[in-house]
Image (cartoon, rainbow over all chains, first blue to last red; front, side, top):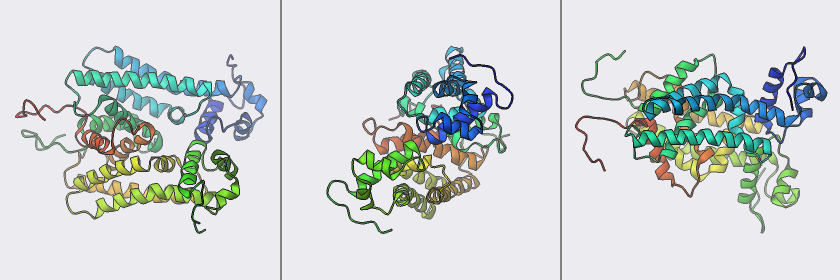
Length: 204
Length: 204
């Protein structure tokens, strides 16, 4: 199961990227090692030079997304401060992970299957979802999140917004920081233009 | 190309539902008429009793979603009133369509392919996205949507939230009206608990 060093022509990084895209488009079960070899224009044995098989490819590809997302969630959970600020940190950093590792997060979000490799990735994803749900509930208990929406629904909608990036984000249009700002403004404060008394006439 | 009336055992409705789920899980191109016959436990010719082929199945299944979404968008565009209220109408009614026709909207949102049948559905979806983008831009021009986020990004994030329903909505947990309320509260006013002066001590 060890991952061998790459060799000239295709390195593991390129094989993983092609595998992630193929699994996303055709499903993990619907993609054979032969399909991957075809897409890469190499032989199956050249792929086995890098990995032990399809299951290891899925594990490495989904871990790319899961390691990043777990890390930013753990950061947010461990931080000092109010839960709503920690939640905002998790959202902001998750947007960065999504943009950095977009093909791997797209694969993760599409997994539905029942093979052990898929189940393992889905279980890791569920742990992250639970940690986010807990942060929302805590922020509500601290009086910082509106109490008139179920915290579980709030968490789903918040990350529904974040995760939609994999469908529409194009790197040329805007950077990660700009998108993270947009997500936080809309999710936390709403898209409605606030009309407050005492507001400056020309907000910067 | 005409759709023939159903016959005892399986009606067109059931065939469509199974086809939509199969196309969503395995991709349109990755699903054969033989696969569908297998899932339904009937012969291929029994499916051809209902439709002319796989392309008609995709058209009927995606039209189920597109007709509903086009209708609610056209309603919102044609309504009198401010663009932000018309946008809220579109969001609220789209949530209802998503929940009513969930397997068909899920299929529509997953389509990526390059066959003419898929391209046609994606083009119809794009028209709806443009109409929503125009409503957001209009609401911003009317001063009701925050001007510090690109209207196109706002529209994407708003419907990213709405469309996420196909991933997590479970009918037993909450009804369409309750979810539509949650989406509108969070998307328009944000998940942050507002702290306004002069607010009643015990809001209902």
